[in-house]
Length: 124
Image (cartoon, rainbow, N blue to C red; front, side, top):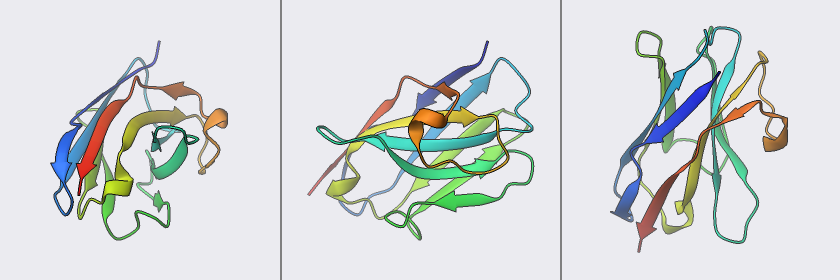
């Protein structure tokens, strides 16, 4: 079965950087799109970034474009999210997700697998 395990969350100050990692296991992920979503208290889960596992094509939400970078390490079966210039509004639980399609679906309910999430808190 597919398992996604996030790590790397924490408490940082505005302007700092943080790197999240997602260890994926249970199958071969070629043919999948891997992504990161986030959910702040009282808000709906929202799309952050995604990467096509095979081609490496990346996609970003407008709110993080230019600050966040998603990447994958095929050898380690991990997906990373490098977050720079963090803002208090980036505070949320960040979830890794996998979707067995070759394109990006920004609606979280359409994704197939989810991790448990990791908390990111950015203080002002």
